[in-house]
Amino acid sequence: MADPNQPLQPTQPVQPTPPTQPGQPVLSAQAGRPVCHCAYCRIHALFGPIMIISVGVVFLVAQYSDRYSFGELWPFLLIVAGILKVAEALAPREGHVGS
Image (cartoon, rainbow, N blue to C red):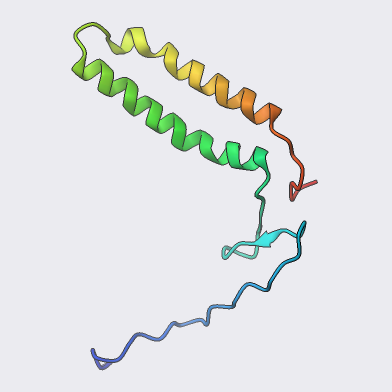
């Protein structure tokens, strides 16, 4: 049985990420996959969280408002999704890992 006063030892040593040069993709901790930090990928990665927040806002307004119901507010979700898709399409892919 392990001594509870001793710190736990990792089963696999964590390998430090080697320093990268500008323009070189950064490798993630998951299976050595490259992580892209271009504007397109950042907007694409934010699509899900922004939509979840938007759905929450619509439900919150529908719940606490006497004037608006979900049936009147759901087009707001389409507008948010459209704005995000337009921003994603217009974002530069300069430095994109896949290209």
